[in-house]
Image (cartoon, rainbow, N blue to C red; front, side):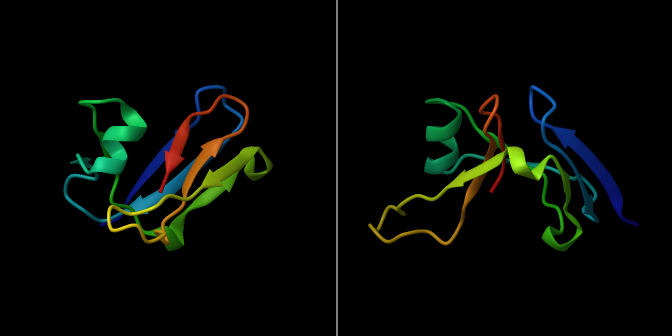
Length: 91
């Protein structure tokens, strides 16, 4: 049975809802990109949600950036963040 997850950026300019069917709707990610984004020894939370269920309000407050993989190639992944407060929201 799907679980609805809700969240927002720090300033409240962006809100989202998304569906997940995993028993634990999150896992720790400790990849090099998450460590760099969240601080030296930190990690990000991967909510393991279905991208097709993502609903966003305040989309005009979003921006995104890409990055280069360890092998030097551009990654197709994009990281979204709030333009107002800088909160990283999803990849």
